[in-house]
Image 1 (cartoon, each protein chain N blue to C red):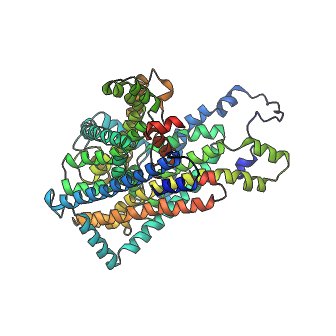
Image 2: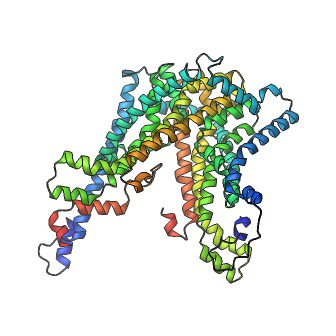
Image 3: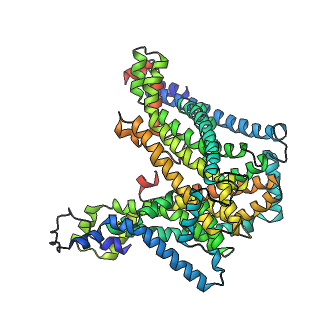
Amino acid sequence: MIAVVTTMTTEVPAPDRVTQEDIEEAARRKELIIRWISRISGYVVVLGLWEWASGAVLEENLLPGPTRVLQTAVELFQDGKVFPAFGASLSRILLGVFLSFIIGSMIGIITQNRWFSGFFKDAITIGLTSPGLIWVLITALVFGNRWFGPILAIILTTFALVSVNVAEGIGSLPKDTLDMARAFKVNLVDRNRHIVIPHLAPYLFTGLRFSFSIGWKVTVLTEIFTASSGIGFELRIAQILFRQDEVLTWILLFFVFALFLEKVVLQAIEDRFFRWRKEIAST
Amino acid sequence: MTAVATKPPSSSSGTAIPPRRPSSAPMRFIKSPRFARAMFLPAVLVFWLISNKLIENSWDFDSSVLATPREVWDFMWAEVTRDTVAPKDLYETFGISLYRLGIGFSISMILGTTIGLGMGLSRAVNAFFHDWVMALLAMPALAWALFLSLIFGFDNKGPIIAVVLAGIPFVIVNVREGVRSTPRDLFDMSNAFGVPSNKRTRHVLLPSLYPFLFASARYALSIGWKGLVIIELFGGQDGAGWTVKFWYDAHRLHGVIGYSMFFVIFALVMENAILEPISRRVFRWRPSLNSPDIVEEEMDALYDVEELNRELDANLPTGSTQET
């Protein structure tokens, strides 16, 4: 309303004409209020239901409420269990995702060749569709407690995502720019540095983010079967001891942490990387 | 990296194509992608046997831990012919799992469509559910498996709820996207011509929703299946996941690999023999819409600005829109 008044005083005639912008502005503000009220009520209702259900629907030991989960989280932090476990899991994830990134991109590159594309076609389909659980169990049986069993499982479940993205990126390389570079006798290093890599970067990042989001889930699963440290191991212990509150707390803690890494850290790196190229950073 | 850049962009780019060396028919056959594809399986088998040998030689392994392709094949054949030492044979096992998957899938479709419709039609409802749906979308099936198996024990309830929880966010997000992509002009026109709302739903909303419903059904099935297997593994006494665990606990690698093969075959059959023909049938009249953009993960802002503007335009008082 204030906006309306000021426009009426500053602009000369326009007696009772409310501009399009004002209407949009008002609608937008109303929209924002409705959105936030609904959002907050969503949180209140879900958390409230959860708190009420623990105790009323199921026993509190079976379904610990949000307050209980918070308490347990504080206890776990005070015991100093959280950071070693996170560290162990995270190092596995990083190593696995890194290796799968390299192997996946290599496969993505050589599938530019028609023969290899045919050769790896089924491998990529299998890699994309088979549940991680299969690889986890197989590597667990073969390699037991050795450190590279889990890593291999991560690689096998995530490499195809990277390959598909890399292959797609290479397929859409700007041909005219490459041709021009060749016509002007730009050398190989510069051509790669200034054309190929900048063009591939968004695809690589997408592949990386996808493989991370699958990778951390697989890692936790492998740790349940074969590790003696890490989130999965702690989960397993808590489940064997029937400590539902700890099960829930561990999984939620790690869930939040992984989402933070994926959506905030990786996204920030990506945005920073693409600062010079606004149209990509925004997508 | 270098391999890509050195490779000239294939044909069509002005430069003269060097005359191709005449190659003999068998060479051409060996160089064809189809032959390469056929070579994949033998290559895997050879790789398998060699790595078996390597592992056996490099560590002190009891070679019975490792499985040979032959053993896996024999195991699978025995399972198919119902000759098994597991308490339930292949068909019963998959029957049990399929039953759970079916019930969980139906519930997640019905509930998910309802919530998705609500979220697509009303922005308040959307804001209410949005964050929780996104959280569900990223939640690993493992979390549900551990959690629900402690609550429900070896019941049917746990697996069914796990299937629902794994599949429902995909249904919700896809249906919401479908509602948002319904052609607004058609809605406006049917409004202007006074078409009753039940007819409007049937002829305008539903046809544009179908592709999205299909996409979500596909996703809910495949994700639900993966979730089901994991929860059966941790909190079950029968079903496909439990049976894999049975072979795992018995340290029979050929059992684990063979059963995993059944999973893959099962997924392929479900996709190619059931879903694909149905979708082709349903979309015969509209071939281009067979494969809509599937919304797998949408973690970005609540609304994109462009769409918000469009909706605002539509909702503005009529007088002002006519002016512009």
